[in-house]
Length: 115
Image (cartoon, one colour):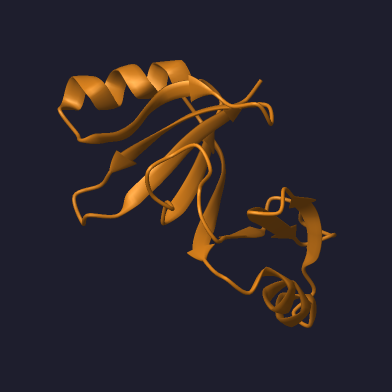
């Protein structure tokens, strides 16, 4: 298993203002579904930050997202460890397969892979 990127997820009711502010730091909008928006560096596209007012298909807004190359294998390992699954593994309509798990610090991690 390998990690492709790690992205902080920030709960925000100010998506437009966040886009404008982080634009000052060099980020550009690369995805916006209205309730979730991702900004990325144009020169290093894996340097990203995500903002969301809610998560439309999960019970909570995660604290961070980790993209992996084999989400099914990671899910099996996490379930086998006994960690708390917050959102079961599922395919989402925007092209990712994901699940949420609570880490030992109480943080919710969105683990995903692109289909």
